[in-house]
Image (cartoon, rainbow, N blue to C red; front, side):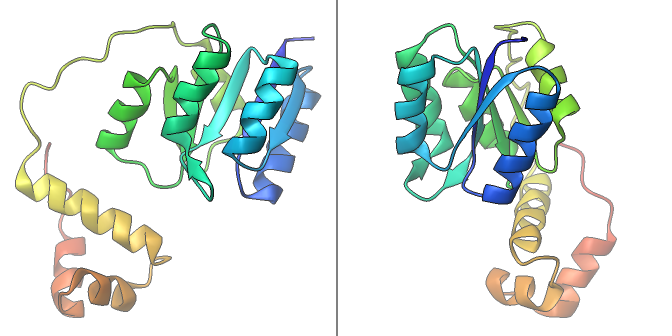
Length: 175
């Protein structure tokens, strides 16, 4: 056995598949659908590692990182999300997460992230990202939230569809 691992995700299909994939790699894998169930499960089984979704009904994965570390300070926690951004990655690691990955991520990528050295220093940014870069990241997040639908993303952003298409046709600005 490679140890105990807990997967916390509100998407039951993803959670079940990841638990099965980890179990096939000789882990004692368990799943929890939300933060409340995860706290209860962690207190009962004391997992060595946890994979935590960032956005879940009933609480934030960032808050859950703190709660899980309060249960067991030695637990290695990986935050996994479909809404990746630099800001949330920094927040997750500052709260104690070992690493941060964006979905889709498979079991091998998750296990590789756990193998990275613990407590690696997060370099302080030399400067703030450019306004163009922040705008580009925001547009990408809204477009992802809209399932790639440019017309819907344009409505959410409050800009004309053609303006959004022009912005998307450009290369991403440097940070």
